[in-house]
Image 1 (tube, one colour):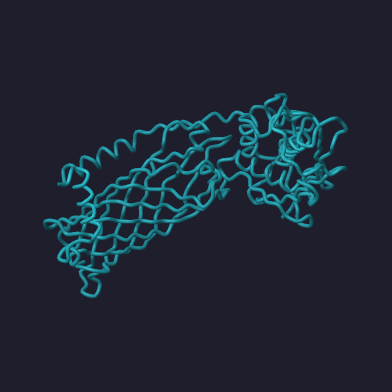
Image 2 (cartoon, rainbow over the protein chains, first blue to last red; image 1 turned 90 degrees about the vertical axis):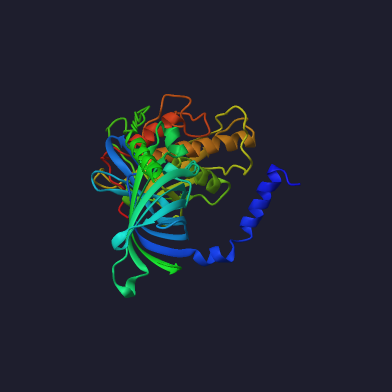
Length: 206
Length: 211
């Protein structure tokens, strides 16, 4: 007899062993590359007001999708982007602080629409990974932050480009590092990110 | 799908409702040169500031520690320092006389077993510095301090003197500040942090040495 915990372990073992063959055959794999804008990470005023910003960053995503009842698809998406972080003063001075990589893992629900459109919405966790513990990251970057995301992709009606799609993605999350908290910031800040990317379906139906 | 839309709308509302007030950045003590009122700090274009540390005894470790401590007072990329050779240094830090033994600092009550002084190197105009911009000397004082007490004094004093090389050109009148005339604390305090952070957003009147 298998108890509650044992049943869970068994289910996990079955899941870890890999999906059944007919499911594996339906899994779609896609990847995208593009550029991402991130709204200011911090805004402060010492003598004059200034922003701390992540630069326009290259962004890459890989995702695996499993078709649900048409026209829905469930996806697991891993997104990474990397850029410098700097203070932008009103007089144009840019003071580099460090280099920052963000890693986001999310579950996404996608729906196919007419005319080559696909819309996506999802949630997940995002982690900031600075290259060194300095500046606003001197006491670390905090834990994994939940985020919400939405995207729209369009596949041009061209036979040769049927695996390609142009995609616009938006996500938002809250941001506050331990160093900013120690400095006296009491509230986290909402960060908006917008990315434009080219998505390519590597495997499965586009 | 309705639930997804509701969740997205909720997230948008939460996202728009934050009110983030900047913290208090009021400086705790003066930083300008007491007589002329001149203000100096390293501009972004001069970073990282290059420090040469006397190669004898524990000076290199003291300077490295002090540079790291000062870097950690800033949040927004205002200051970076590195150790360098004497030919290219912006700041020279040397022993004035006796080289003290390299022993762990005594964690007990502070003893004034050493002193230091920092001299800016002005060019002919008096409105700019020339390389090396500062020369700092550390001296052992005659007395009955143990080697550990002397090491602790040197660590504190190097942090204090490097504070002057950052532009903190006044002594604080606060025994809990590292920039107190005689430094009694091992690391910069919150008052030191607020003051140096503010200084690095003020327009300086003294220019750095050319790169």
